[in-house]
Image (cartoon, rainbow, N blue to C red; front, side, top):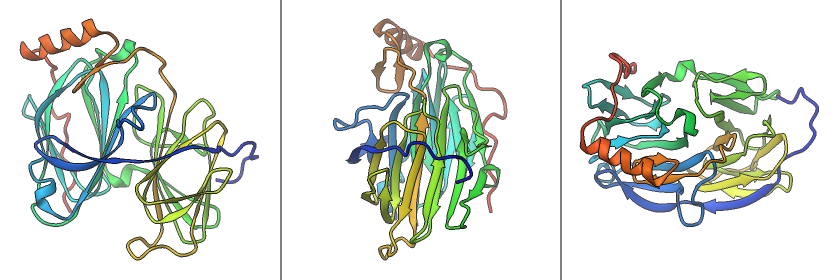
Length: 304
């Protein structure tokens, strides 16, 4: 991943932390994007991390709720989550699996944990759709851990999982309407990861755990921080020589996307371009018109 000529490392433009929040039927989570400090980063609308070993924090799950006008990406790191929709289709996410749901013109679905004890950890990212795709047919992509594109840094000190987008000449399996890149990287103590990054994409790093330094100015980062980068065409991340007791390496989620630069009208689970479109979405929801899901779209994930 260092084979290309390096031109400009991206500097750190902002460091932020998420805030405690509750969603669904009372799931406790950390809201990273979608807060007063960081309302959205076009095309990303929201990023939530859920992580707890107390079943009371997550067991109530996210019962039936509607969506229109954007995509949700759910990435499980521990535990299991079963998805269902208003047409009776179901699918199961396990650790390492991803579900990419294009709400498009509308669906009603649920997301429910399937275990009462043990660690539950994962993310949900909301990605906006451009106006031309707001009313596209809803669909799901179910990605197993084995389908994700795996790369290693030249020195073997970093493992990179490309879930979507083109990174370092390699493409992840996720098929997106809005051009984005979604990467999960693990960097061993003392190792460095340098990734080429599209200059027309913004760049974000969320630190899952561990500690290290990032960017052209080597800003120190620790678990729970979100890094927003400035302009450039390379990302630079280095893991600290010594990690804390809970993490043996620097674990990060790296996100980037091409800004849509369109008006956003947002109310709860609906994200459109105008207030009139929002009103229509609510009317359609009340009238039971939200979406037809193709049979088998929520293919079950493999249970090991």
